[in-house]
Length: 617
Ligand code: C2E
Ligand code: MG
Ligand code: MG
Image 1 (cartoon, rainbow, N blue to C red):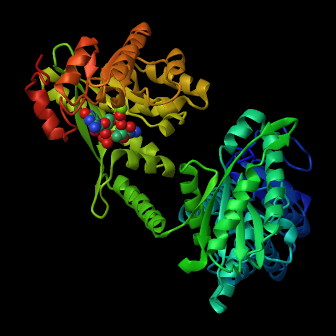
Image 2 (image 1 turned 45 degrees about the vertical axis):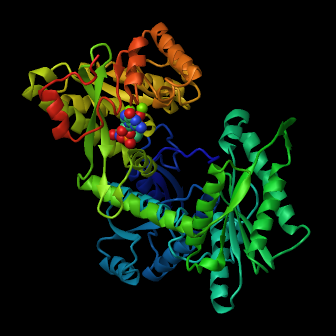
Image 3 (image 1 turned 90 degrees about the vertical axis):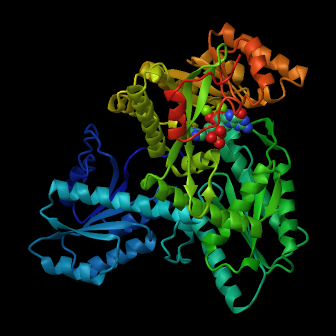
């Protein structure tokens, strides 16, 4: 996204018939009075604009949508309007933005008016009537509820469609101004979607072949990040012009094409009346080539590439959003195949998309119903082979999808935001388990517990507070707790990440750098990161016994760790030879199938109860 979003609960527009009513609403919503402009007042969570006339309101709403920062709610106080005029105003507002939520203020001695409005819009889910004289709490609650509802509807629609919901309300073609993207002048996302919708409807009457292409620049974030947003914007404008140009040019394969901007660096092309669905691929290749020509922006040459996903009408789409979602999924495949190319959505991808949506829902339910469990993999001290701790690893078996691999589960949880509640749950379970074992078995007193913390969790500024709360609630000794983090957590936002890690470490726990060696900033990481333990990835161990180059790398990593005074744990020990090598290198701790697989709590407890040497010397 190019535009930085302001942090607040939502944008609200106040439409009041006179200045006094306007000031009153602004005050109750925590905004400065626009008439006296006492801008020093502390602002509440809402960003409030105010107007006194319907025309002005409609213009503001259209403008806000165009800028991609739509209002969530409008508070209306038409002091002396009749209910008929009020109803017309509401219609006009929804016409301007179908996703708006409205709060209408009415005199409580005038129940007819409120009743009439409510009756007229009965069943409309996006209207609240607030009685006057206005009570601060009622106004604040209405604002919160409406803004929240707006946000939930939007994210539900995005989750379902991977596209912005249009609340099923057709766009109005008579107002093209609000349907153009401000930066590129191209049709906006909503107009683009409307064209797809129209095309689907036409095709239902007269069969025709059409296609939707979704384009996304490869590594656009890098351009924005290194050259600045201004250059990023220029790039998008130039790119839009090129796309438009190449859709016009030469061998025309379709009767009409619409290029629109979906947002950020994402564009969409609708190709109508294609002679042959393979023509869509030809157009896609032409667009890929057009984008790949070098750009000269602010006296610099830049080369960028684009990935294209194609969905064709063969799948008999009913909803435009589904077609765009599929093109988007194909685009993502093109990207992971290295970018600078196109991919056509096919049956296998369809299966994958459906599967994925189903998995997301199942995971949500499973977390809610506490269906996820932990397995514990033993960690041993290399020099005497004794059990010194466990790593907790999440496990989930779904009735329909079967056992879902931990890394896939975590990926879905990260993408859906479920990782935050899930992460805390996992930590709590693991800590509670360790405390239970320590209470039951003397031999468990010195055991440690390592818990994985994902990248997304580390982005949460509240993570240290949450971890502290778990430590308090479970009574676990923080010195026996380790948090495993990966290098990828430090790719962005390094200073904040380091500060957060320091906070975590101050709780008394150990920080372990997991999968060391698989990322691409390993050494730099060691200088900057406050870590205690380095976990060497299994990849280095697997061939260390058979290939001397791998063995040397392993050796080098260990001596680097020593130089930084870090403890070393090695992962993926599967053979006695590998264990012998770990000994020879004087590695501190080891983990792997040879020493023990991840097992359910009962089996892990058996190891705790009668501590055995897991790797005889
Ligand atoms: P990881 O943290 O590096 O965990 C080690 C993975 O290697 C585990 O896979 C483990 O079962 C496997 N493993 C252990 N010893 C051997 C061996 O000798 N040979 C082989 N081939 N594999 C071995 P698992 O449980 O499938 O977890 C995969 C990854 O998923 C983990 O890698 C971790 O990144 C993530 N993960 C697992 N549980 C959690 C969790 O509770 N929270 C978070 N955030 N991530 C988790
Ligand atoms: Mg780990
Ligand atoms: Mg690991």
